[in-house]
Each structure stands twice: as C-alpha cells, then as structure tokens.
Length: 505
Image 1 (cartoon, one colour):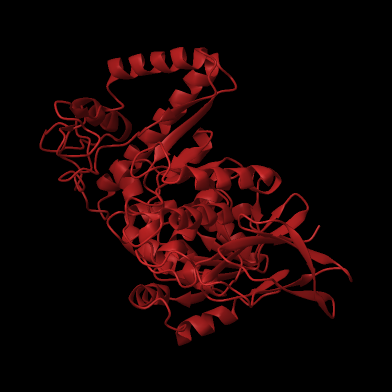
Image 2: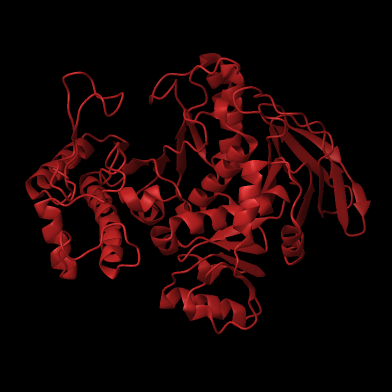
C-alpha cells in the first residue's frame, strides 16, 4: 500500500468519499508492489484478449487528494523508496525535504513520481496491444494544468504520448460543486484555456472531457447548463461527456443529450476531424516550471491566455515537444523559470531567425543573453488575472494595452466581437474554421442563457463573391455574403446565441 512519510497506509472508509460504501475500504497500491503489478498486467492481457475496443483506467495516482494527504507527497512505502534509491541514490525518507522545491532531492522525487505513473500507463498499453494491436488505452485524469498534476503524479502533458486518449475529469470552477451551472464567465474562459492546453499536449490524439453540467442548481434549468457545457467543449476542440450529477452515467435531460449528439453526428466532418490552431503568437507551456513553481507559473500562463482570448488574438500553445516546429512571429514565455538545454537552444534558434521573444516574470538564466527579448520582470499578467477575478468586466489595464501592440500582427482572420465571446481559429484539412463560444451575460448559479450577439464581424482574405458558411450551435447551416474591402472581405454574422462555426469552402 501507498504510505505517508509517517507510515500511515492509504486506506479509507466511507467518510473519505461518496463512492465508498459503508463497510467497504478504498485502498491505494504502490505501482512498485511487484506481485500486484504482475497480476495487474495479467488481467490487462486477459481483458485485451477478449477483443474489446479499449481499456479505461480510473484513476492512476499517488494518493494525495483525500483530506489530510494533500501535502504528503506520498508514497513512502518500502517498494517505492527502494525504487527511488536505485534510480537516484537518495533515501526518500531521509535525504529529501518534502515540499521544498528548492531542494534538489525533492525535485528528483517530484520527477520520479511523475515518471512512475507515466511508465505504469505505458506498460499497461504495451501489455494490451501485445495481444490486441487495435485496442485503445484511456486513463481518466482529474488534474489539468495546475499544481495537482505533479502532486498526484499524473501529468497529462507527459501521459499523452504513451496512451491513446485521455478522459479529463476537468471540473474547472471556483464554486464548490464545479458544475457548468455554477460557472462564472471567468470560469468559462479558464475552462477554454484548459481544453486548448490539453489539445496542444495531445497532438492528433482525442481529448475526452468528463464534466458535469448540473447537479440540482435551483435557479438554473438543466437543459441550459447542458447546452453551455457541450458548446464550450465542442468549440474548444474536445469530445464531450456529461453525466447526471457527479457520477459517470445517466443524463440530466435525455432529450437534450440526444439532440446534442444527433447534431454532432450530423457534422462529424468538423467535430471528428483534427484541428490545427492558427495564429502568429505562441504561448509557452513549461511542465517543469509548473512542477516546481505551480502557483506563479499557472497564474502567468492563464493571465496571458486570458488577455489573448478576450481580445480575439489567435495563438498556439507551444510546448517543449513542439517548440522546434513553431513558425509564428512572437513567442511568449510566461514566467518560465526552468528550461533544459535543448529548450534553450530552440528558443535561441527561434530568436536568431527573427522571432520576437517576450518573457515575463523570472526567466531561466539560460536566456539571459537574449538581448532582443522584451521583458516584463514584474509579471503584470498575474495582476491582470487578479483584476479579472475581482471584476471580469474591468477594461484592460495600460500594461495590457501596451502589451497587445506587440501582438497586432498580420492575422489571416480577424474577429470583432464582445470581449465575452471566445473565437478559436483553426484549419481542418485545407479549410479555415472560426469557432465562436458566447459567454456574455452568464451569471453563476443564476443566468445560464447567454446574451445574444448581433455585432460579430469576421474579416478575411477571400475571392470576390465568396460566401461565408455559418453553422449555429444546434442549428442549420446557411451562407452569407460579405463586403469587399480591398483584398479582404468583411462578413457580418447573423444573430448568434450560444455559439457558431464559420468557414469558407
């Protein structure tokens, strides 16, 4: 069993979680328990041999999310401690300062725990495909881009390359119930940030979102909450999975669920296809910085992306795996404090080829010689996020206005809309699509029907006479004509309710 540093085993009763029935125990085993792991892999091969399509693993973690375990950084059982010593030469019980990210030993412990869960999932998949080459492995993971990822050891950035899809139980929201019915407009924007990040980590693999629209909110109709949730996930590029309350089955309103899935099925060429985000601006996600400085990094990362989303500036999320292929004009490093030599070389190469690097907060010393970089050492994006948390409708600060001047580049598609509308521009095949999500007027727990939008304009290069296709969320496709403005055409969209997709054939 997994254990705290004190030796307390990870065994829990019904007081710990609603899914533990009276008289049952919830027990967490170390991945280094050799006999158990051997039996586990045997079961995986037996299941795969039945010919089924996939195996769903719920949930591979180091137990650090029940009350009293959050800061334990478990597991300190004999098997895990022995494996860590064999790999690093350190005794996890004596040679590391648990929770101190300045301690080199603790940093190794953090990385070891993440690598352990990643290797465990990779071994499960190897065993499954050995007997069933077409099978898929899908782990369910609740941490997203936040501090919980290194704490539980299940880092979706590291996991995507070794699995076939990830089911994210991503319940972003400041309210206690975490449902769509209780989300503020800021919550919805941060939800978009999370899903866009997952899609950047995933590459061409699917992203499933297991989330909950409604769990009895008295002032919100369940249908409205379901529609908001489905729309937000589809526009950001994820698959959707909405259960009844905080379980994994059922539906709050079956008729609405059928309506949503019939509409998605009718447009599988859009929602089932791989999207490539467009934009000349890149925003860097540093998993290593997040592991050791999660509070500051995540706030900086979210602050920058919130600013871009609210001003309809298109961006691509760049990671250590994709930085070499990034061909945009500007790369933003939001408080990226830890960087490998390989990453540093890629950033220097980008700058040497004419790319503009913008760094906020504390940057890694390897980038000190980038004289052409624009630097904001006081990380003003964190203050921007804090201001949005206080009043989401506050106008942009002077810093934000100045910062945006660097980013008004030659966009192939320009969107003019309310700051409470999100616009994601992406290519599917040879066509460019604009995905619009409307969160204007929503109020947590009270108003779940967004304010309709009548003044959305899309400007893009198009041949004379070209028509823009419009597909409203749950609606029927239509076409509109635009006004020629030199080499570009401006289209004024019809009234948009929750969301819409637009494109030119």
